[in-house]
Figure 1 (cartoon, rainbow, N blue to C red):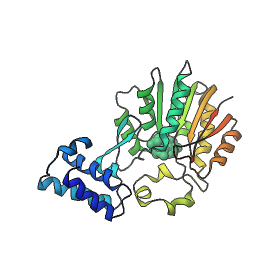
Figure 2: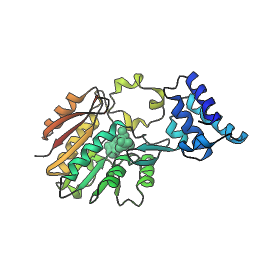
Figure 3: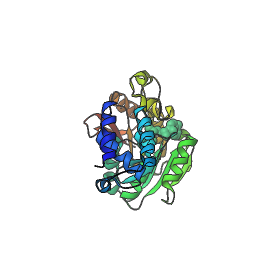
Figure 4: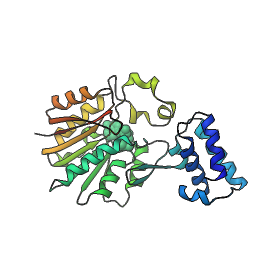
Length: 275
Ligand SMILES: C[S@@+](CC[C@H](N)C(=O)[O-])C[C@H]1O[C@@H](n2cnc3c(N)ncnc32)[C@H](O)[C@@H]1O
């Protein structure tokens, strides 16, 4: 690694960063405009580049997410534009997308609605990884919607700005898959979230009532409205309330309700079928 990245990794270590080496390499590579593996060939940085590195280091040590410093987030095979005003896609969501891709691959028709689309990470991954999809992505927040438009431009996805509760009535009873990573953090957990999450991810993307199930109750009703008989719902949720999600989906009338874990083994998403 270049001297600049090595020195920055030391500073990030002393400030308590959990992954100082990778973060330092990403910041320095971003400033130099090179891919991380090319850093090995970098001998030195200019004074101007060092000033920019120092500025980004200060912002990182003050708690700003790395993805806001570089303006990009990675999700499965996607590189997405992110920044203030949109939720940063998380690796735990990747498992649910993998599950959905397998189920969709088995179907002849592939009409998909993503609710709560944010940056568009889920829709982008589905569009890249499987052919023959008809994709619709719904997002209510205007700031997040601007990122959605940018990330899905030219991908052939129908983008809908509005509340999922009433979105896409023209598709009622015809959809093969509803997939969603909704806001789901219980309000009571707010004081326990890391500051880089609470202060930099939009509150509308995170919190959803006392038990974190408010949005998931809407998701269940919308899935019952949109899905064709035999159509599938996949919804992510907080690791603290999987039994509540299972109960909510059953109470809404969904069938074959199954809990799933993420890659760390934590309860993370539930799938169900419309009878
Ligand atoms: C946890 S983020 C998920 C974003 C993206 N799908 C991802 O996985 O990175 C939840 C998103 O739902 C949006 N949202 C919240 N309530 C909504 C509603 N009633 N209708 C549509 N979108 C909503 C938020 O603005 C936010 O972008």
